[in-house]
Structure formats: structure tokens, C-alpha cells
Length: 413
Image (tube, rainbow, N blue to C red):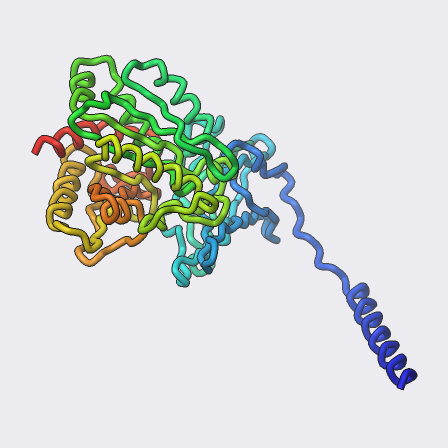
């Protein structure tokens, strides 16, 4: 018995050794040559996106985005890019972006389309738009840059944690501004609510931006709004006598700092799960916001309107339709809000259809659980239909500066 077992072991060992020998004898594929004018892809910049890069035989630079994954779900997302391309002065480079096959609710989809542009900057602050090309059955994007040298490259104009810090420093001294800490992120970054206006104002508006890290449009809108309502003019002062704003400017600070796309660092989508109290362990960002809202309710200061600000490929006002008492009144208020956005801003994209419901979003959850008229306002990251151009931060700031007129007329009914 023992000799047979020993023979079997020796045979297995010989087969394994022969396999190793075959592998060792197989030549490894040669890497594609590095383009002569290319130096490096620097992702260490603030809000830089994690990615893998390599070279194609034709000299193109292949950029593979890295996916975020949602907890307890097949869902994954990759759509953020922001890095510094380093090349020799006067050089040209072709970039090919890949890993866009996102999964949402078990269905594959692409976060990019034929309108997707690439933003470029020489200094990381002043941006311009460059047209891209969909290739390889629409799952890759290609753009040729140059002649140039080093460039910052992004999907949308970045808004970083340092930009928020500068904003808070600018507005903090204003007598009608109060910045209230409400909690911490997974990685222990502080979360704050900015109150602008008097607590005794007749109406209260809540705004939240950046639940999804790649979507900075809401931050630029908030910058424009704050510039308008904190202007030293009689109209601005009179406006803040009537309306107080409560703003959570960067809901997913960890994701923004790490250049992520959609989820928090524990795999939770901060714009889902609002049909029930958020987990303080898995989702401390939403838990902190819910605790703040509970305290506001206790003090009789519940918001009269709440908007969740996002970027996507469409740019609509997402109106939820949960089974709540007097849903018709809510839908009428959202219809009025849409009309005022069209009247006072470049917004033209409209709202979601009569059968649409977005369960779990802040817009749906706050309406269903707290009776707060709430919605998700998306800004198209590819194209502004009302201006016929690819968006930059200045375009979203322009919309933000017009929002006080929207809210004033909304409450003047």
C-alpha cells in the first residue's frame, strides 16, 4: 500500500515539475514600446483617479479605470478620471480610456456616450473641452492631445476638498453664515452643514452635493448660489430675510479625496437606502445627516424643500412618487419648481416621467419618511442643452447664481 502511495506522490510531483518547466520555457509577451515623448501619468494629484496605464502597439496610451464596488451587490462603477499627463514639450499623445462597463441592478451599462468630452488644463485650474470618440463597440473612448507637453486631464471640471476649504474660509466671517459640524466620514473627515440666513427665516431650503464622488457639478452650483446670496446688496440681504439655506457641500469626502466614482469607502451608495435609518457603521455620512435632520425636526425647523445635486448623462429633475398622503400636492410643487428652473436658468432638460419612482434616494426617502418635498436635480455632465455646449464649472456657477430667484418665486405662491 505504502509503495503505491509513494509512487502516486512522485508521479504528481514530476507532473507538477514538468508543468513549471513548460511555463518557464514559454517566452513572456514583450511589452509594447513606450512612446518616446511620454514620461508619466501622475495620479498623485488631489482628487486624482486610480487607474492602470499601459501602451498599445500603435503608441496609444491605454488608461484602465478602476471600479468601485457596492456592498452586497453585483453593482460596480467606474467613470471618474482626473490625472496629470506628463510629456515632452510639443509632443502629441493619443489616450484610450477603458473599463466603462458599469453594472447597476444587475444590468450592464455605459456611463459615457457620443457626447462625452475630455477636459484639459495647463495649470489644473483653467479648463477647456476636447471632443472624444467612442471606439471598439462603444466601450472605449479615444482622444488625441497635442501638440502639447504636460496637461491635466479630467472628465468634468474638478472640485476638490481644498476648494471647499477655501470656500469655507471665505464665507465663515459673514454674520449670516454658520458652519456646523455634524459628524465624520468613514476615514474620519469632518462633515459640516453651512447655514446661510437667519434661523427665523420664513422658509428653509436644504441642498446636498457630492453624494457620488465623480459628480462636482453640485459644488459649482453651490459656489454660484453662495456668491449671489452673500453679495453685499439690498436684494441679497432682503432675500436672506425670507429664506435660510442649509447646505451639506461634500457628502462623500473620502471618495472625493481618493478619486473614486460612486460609493463610500464601505461600499454604500449615499443616494440610496433612505427608505430606512442609515447604518452608523457602514454609512456614517448618511447617519450624521439623519441625526442632524432629526434635531431640526425636534426644533420645528424642518426644511420646506430639499434638493440632492448630481451629475449624470441626462440632466433631469428626478421626481419621486412614493405612496404618501397628498402626493398630488407634492407633484404640483415639483411641476412649479421645474417651470421656475426653466424661467430663471439655462435648465431645459425637464423632469422624469409620470411612472418614474426612485426608491431609496434622498428625494424619495425624505418625502416618504419626513414629509419633506424633495427631489434629485441632475446636471448633464456631457452637454448643456440650454447653452449648446459642454459644461464647465462656470456654467454650473451661473445656474447657481440664478437659483435665489427660483426659490423666491417657489415660496411666493
